[in-house]
Length: 248
Image 1 (cartoon, rainbow, N blue to C red):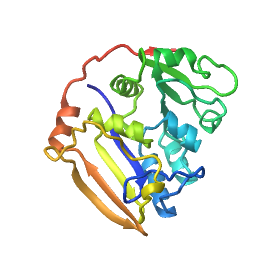
Image 2: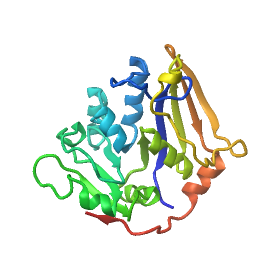
Image 3: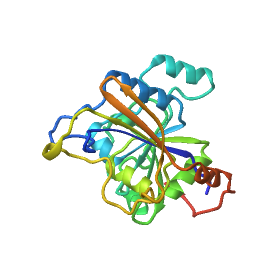
Image 4: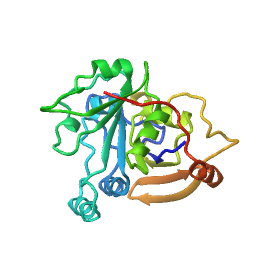
């Protein structure tokens, strides 16, 4: 399979929550860690989130640092990486900041059903996105990744939320995991989780490798990577066709 190198990135509490149960978004990272994430973003070709993250956080998914944006332009790239949304239902608000940032339109990977219902499909004025159907009722991540590879995406940063993290990890499509752990637990106030129960291949029999740990203020950063032999097989093997991606 021809696909990008996939990095999953998240900030979590010690007990694995991405947020609490309040209406206000809980910030788990500090300023230094947010700047680290911006640097990671600057080095990838695309940033991806799920529809739940769009609804909860209303992100723009753009580089914050003007210096990093200028550096990318000097290298012949767009100021910010391509932006990608995974949404089986296609139920996305055209008023979301992601679709109104003035930068190249995002790509939405959805289902055949979602493509028909997506309010951003086929728009030529105002908020817009490219809508790509990958399966009848869900998002086929493997087809989406192969399509991204065909667009020149070599490194993909997946920033959430928990359902998307779970899907990528359960389908063994993750090459690197970046976890920034905040110095507290949320317990019964915990909201969304980093991952949900699933048959993960990253088991005690095939663990990820720890490649970095460091303190960023009170934040503990850990970076895990899949086994080198698996990486070699993944990227050394010839690409094979998985299916046909329909663009809408």
